[in-house]
Image 1 (cartoon, rainbow, N blue to C red):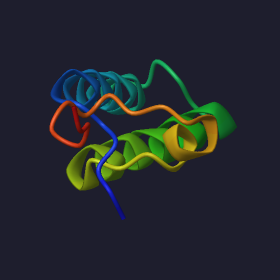
Image 2: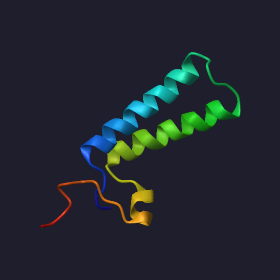
Image 3: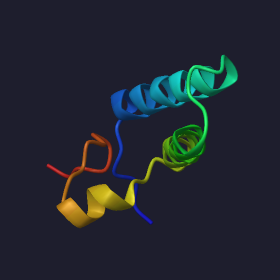
Length: 70
């Protein structure tokens, strides 16, 4: 599994995940939407930790500057 996520992508995903968790924790969202956002938050955090996004592979994206070769 090659890394395909840059530092900016990781930070943005973690911030979005924290916002989703905060929406759930404050009760702003509830029901099915709350669980969907929690799952997305988990996926965002997991992909940030692994520095790999399967969707980037499918679409041929790579934002990791260290993985690119000149």
